[in-house]
Amino acid sequence: MSKNFKFAFSKWLEWLQNEKRISINTFDAYERDLTKWSEFTSNSNNPKKKDFRSYMGYLLEKKNSRASIARKISSIRNFYKFASQRNFLSCDDIDLIKSPKLPQSLPRSISNEQASTLIDSIGNGRPDWEAARDKALIFLMYGAGLRISEALSIKKNQCPLGDWLRVEGKGGKFRDVPILKIVRQTIDSYLSLIPKEFENDEYLFVGRRGGKLSPRIIQRLIKNLRIKLNLPEHATPHSLRHAFATQLLAGGGDLRSIQDLLGHSSLSTTQRYTSVEVSGLIEVHKNTHPRS
Image (cartoon, rainbow, N blue to C red; front, side):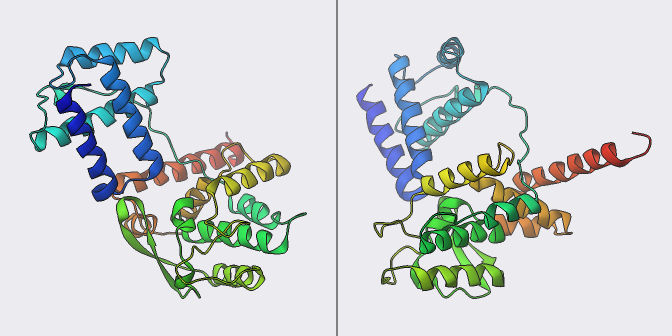
């Protein structure tokens, strides 16, 4: 790794962390992608098209998926655009690089009935306050369309919840989401059972030791319930967010409003849910039409 590349690399990581405020997982992936690239190439200061093509060929030989290669190339492109704009490095060929084309994936949702069954099954054989916590958290994600990271970042001083809640989404962007009465009630029930005194600046959802609840606890809980209840493989914490969006769309919600509620920066991301609705209609038609 050359001295110039190392300097630009460190500045890029600072920018990602302090200005872009990307998630820890995304930060780690970017750092890992650039480290692997720097270990592969001997021309990191001003790479050419042939260098990138060689790297993509190398990744294919190593059995990397098309999605993985696309992400790695995206990381590299992001870095060199940052470095070029600040005159740390030059890379005239970066715009010539094309990532592998990927099929557009549709959001994988669960039905209202499946979500209700999942929530109703929480709590068997566990302390009352933990069961109340998990139910409140899952109700919040499902009822407000929150990412698990967004829900777990809510502080105690934001309670009691009103009709609206301000959440911090990706990139440090804030948005206001409406909170259903049943969501407020489940959170109040959790707070009445928890065996500890909260400080106002503490996180709302806590683990047994009092610190911020790990998302892995909820991921593992839903995985176990999915197996027990014979729910589809894609029944995950994030599928609750998809269920929120598809059900709003099915109920007549407009795309712009749903985009605002989900915190999508691009309307095209929200538009994927229209494809989910169309595919659902096709399935209904196929199963019920007398000529099908």
